[in-house]
Image (cartoon, rainbow, N blue to C red; front, side):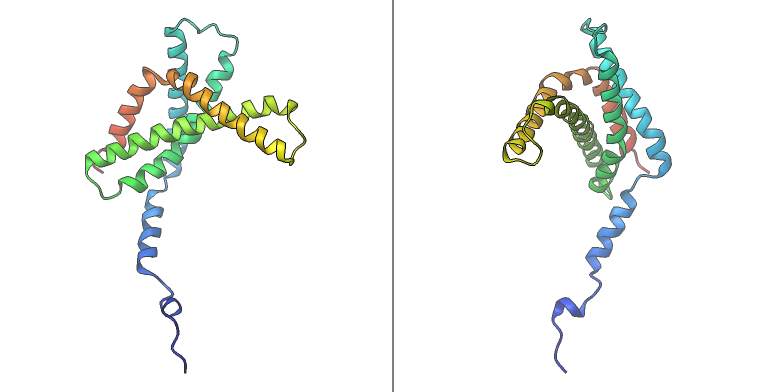
Length: 179
């Protein structure tokens, strides 16, 4: 009888079961996602409104759209950021957990909100683009999306200040507390 290769002899890799267990422990519960997501979305919309009000732009024509964008971005980003933060923070010191949650909440919230902005931006400009699937259309879609991300990073991120930064610190401290 032939000797089987090492990859076939060991069907269950002990490191993969540890990784799987780590990922399963990082999944937020339904309660955390269903209560935390809307709370985070409302906080991000409040942050955008507060920033506009402080800059005396609260009477802007698109106020509802802006607030809906920030609320939706926060709502979607919360469970994703919580999962990513828990993956990075498991079995770590308090300072490391705080940094992981801070990083994941920043990247997740800004990233998801920028993605939603880019999708809306792309939807508006698609009426002037080439037919779908052509090479020119791919270039137009790519550069329109990149322009939207850039525009959001330049103009939209400042709407997270000052209230969003304070909420971010509080949420990261709360999530990093010893369990």
